Length: 164
Image (cartoon, rainbow, N blue to C red; front, top):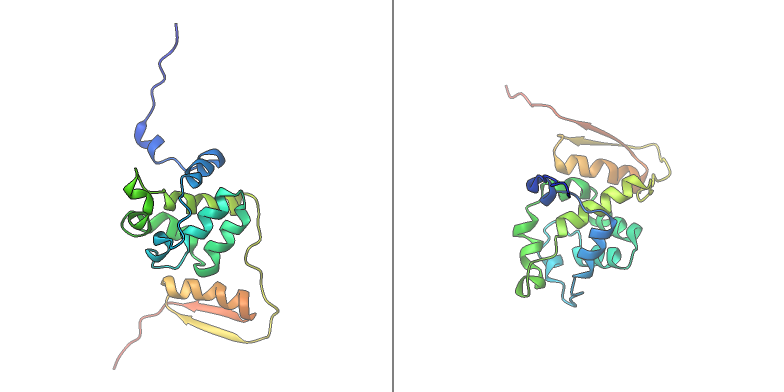
């Protein structure tokens, strides 16, 4: 007699993509010429391009596309309301259900981390410093951008100014 396996469907529904599932999901993409999903992304992550890269097994290209315009791509994959933005704009909505863009983005960033890809490289040090005031998303994003592209040292600080 076969055993019944109890499955927690909530956990299964929210599970991350593995390689096979990511490829299946990327294959569902219609490769739209006008890419409404990319127009719907306020962070400019270009979902159409990174989905195309995943579809053709170019995982490094997918991670590069995400990091190119959004250095916090991993965080955005977790907190972005993509269901109301890029996924809502997906052309696939008229056929069945939209491409799970957030999960594909998380897959690409996780794959980057798990395979020790080096997407962002430090520039040559030029001996200058940049101060980023505040520890919000803008400062956190600006810090690595300055280090990577200009070779400057970055000091990020959060403080509350006092007024007399």
